[in-house]
Amino acid sequence: MFLNARGLLFSLIILPGFLLSSSASLGNYVEDEIRIDVPADGRVRVENRFGDVRAEIWDKPFVSVSAVVTSTKPSGLTRSPIVIDNRGKYLAISTLRIPVTATAAIDLKIKVPQTANLEITTIKGKIALNGLSSSALLKSISGDIDASINEPIDVNLTARSTRGAITSTFASKPATDDHLWQVRLGSGSTRRSIDAQTETGRIAFAPIATPEVVAERPTRPPELVGANNIRPIGTPADPNRPEDLDEGDVIRVDSQLVTLNMSVVDRSTSRGVKDLRQNEFHLFEDGEEQNVLQFDSSSAPFDLVLLMDLSGSTKNVIKLIRDAALRFVDAARPADRIAVITFAADARLVSSLTADREVLRQRINTIDTERGDTRVYDSLSFAMNEVGKEPKKSRRTAIILMSDGLDGTIPGVSGQYGSQLPYQDARRAVEEFDGVLYTLWLNTYYEALNPKDTQPEAFDMGHDRMKEMAEAGGGIFYEVEKLTDLAGAYEQVVADLGTVYSLAYRPSNKSRDGKWRAIKVSVNRSNAVARGKRGYYAN
Image 1 (cartoon, rainbow, N blue to C red):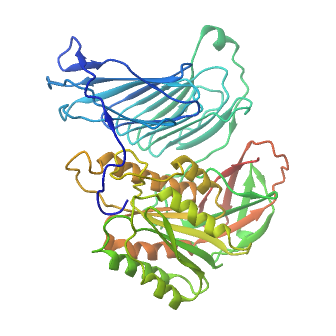
Image 2 (image 1 turned 90 degrees about the vertical axis):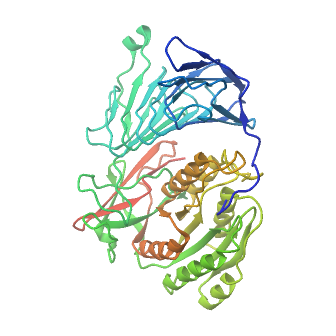
Image 3 (image 1 turned 45 degrees about the vertical axis):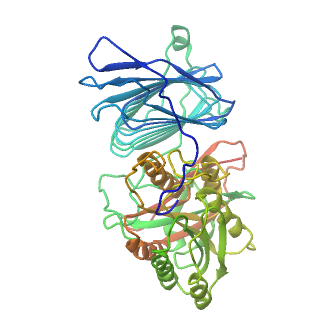
């Protein structure tokens, strides 16, 4: 979605018929349990902006949810604050304060099937998870996260806390200054995972203790597979942050050849470091140094794909968008080839890859408003497929996505349709993409005046998903507060791409056992830090 509100995307189910019963304390209301069927392997997304979420994994095939509303004074609350969007395999649960007072806290209690893929998001609220589902993504800005894991323990754990502590009662523990920690517990026979993320809260992992299991629990240490993050280019450096690779999940592995792209920045200035040579890089897989077989310096050319969201009523600003794209073309290096794709409901190839700047200018000047609801994920898939049609070559590839991230599938977005490709599948495709993804999030927020307008929670989710996709793609996320800043953001992308190096190696460990291979890169240059994807599964 871009720049305006459209018709209602889907029927949000607000549950006015569920009465809340008052507890003994003033202003405290407890809602009766709501049950919703969820198919096996279904997605369950819980977002609570107004309080805590306590989740329990159970063996029943349905979700159970209830709310506790706590206020310092009576609010006259007579209906549920829970909002449900049920689409069969996708179930979204969120909260509204209407008509709850602005100071009220709304806590959610939820029970989720073992087969579900669970995602929980809060702002300040605590997240407590008890048990293991197929996967769990736990995210909070400032709330604490506690995850208790049931026996037998067989799970991949990831924890990220920018300024908070990460603790574990398992045999292998994160260092006291770690802000990113990854381990695999158990045999690795399953792909169950817990990913916990918070900006300022703490994260704690522990087993669910029972007398029979605790006494006999194996003491085999889990495999440490992670390290710490650094800040992206263009932001002030924090001298207390350890040097290491930035976060990422999957690197493309082709015929035993592992390739990765990374930018290198000066720790003291956060500026890109150019003119590095191959012998200044040292690459390690699981602690063992690897022989780099291919190396592209930061001056090597790129194939650049400019992917622009033109959905909504852009008639009055289309010239600004064209001018920003032209600035991008002018800023790119002469050897870089550029393609341009625009989208709303459907993606349209404005120009295929070309180094002819005049042809690009002519085609960009034909860009106009696109029709239909926003399909960000489908359009990103289209762009990656277009790149895949190119014959194999030595050029690196980067996609630059400009959007507010408001795909029509996000709960609370006005419109009727969204991407057919689910967000998690789109993110997985980005992780496996043999290139770099940069995202430019354009702030199009406006105050919702009625339920048919795009809701504040949807804007937040669009922002977060744009950031997540950049991280998954090994690139950088940019916030563009005003459309007039877009041209400058494009120029910054081009500057940042000039600090990207590409390395390829054939792993000394030939086993294709599906286990995680942790990658670390060091640079023999004072204050130089490499950032990019940090590992892969050897499938």
